[in-house]
Image (cartoon, rainbow, N blue to C red; front, top):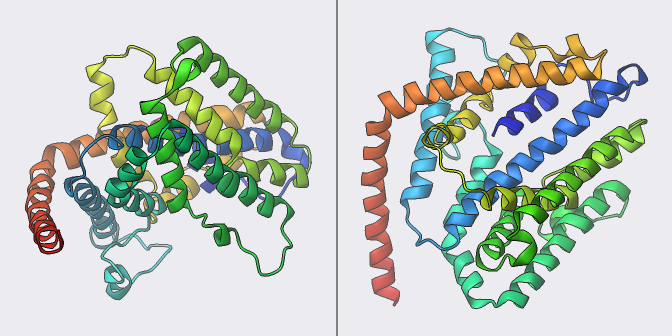
Length: 353
């Protein structure tokens, strides 16, 4: 989650990385690296969740709690900014915009994709249980070819008439199913390499070295754009790095109550700092990365410092607001809504079984 925050510093802030300027080569190369680690963070975040979900029984409690938590922050931030602090929002909204097609003031692409993955979880698990090791590998390789190599090829080369990347079935949502299958493979099979701390550490270091090397090669607009296209969540190097890094830490014996306590606020960190209305305030009004564009080192250090500050503040807000003040309310709503959905499920299964 911390590297995702750093990525948002690079992506949303005032430094104009979209236009290559040789005066800011150092900052542009660092920016490219920060793009990579942010996408890496997304893949690892999904793999962590999928690793545990792929062998669990489905319950409506997970998606319902996630949706309620998202609504809590989205409405809470919007109401606070609009009616309490009287802030003039850069994106004005009417109540009709907020309530339709579903009640949420802010947009979160990750939440949409993750909720759909949670709802698809029981069916994905049926597929995983039905496949042997070789078949699961074949499925993963086919999806990597379709949604990684071919999609990136379309982005880089383009120009093919009447052809879009989603013609191959690729969206951020469907891509999460690929990460789900990868996580299931790691959990069920792994093998000597992924089960070795030594090999996964070497794989992680080599992958990150390649990322630094590729970022260093970005000396023109074309090269920058080509490398950036491969640094998305579905990039081969991003997928490979996420597998090695996740597997390395899976092989480590870590047992920390502090880490576990803080980890419980990571989703809250995302919902707070990536809120559609908070985001421009943080990265464009309070923090200006353009002040550090002259030096790659200064740009990196500023990104680390500001991102750490945002990260810590969001953790504190989540602990106080969601986990201490409103936890009981959210848990009670989750419990009662889950009961309703469980009864509907029982009725449907009883009728058609």
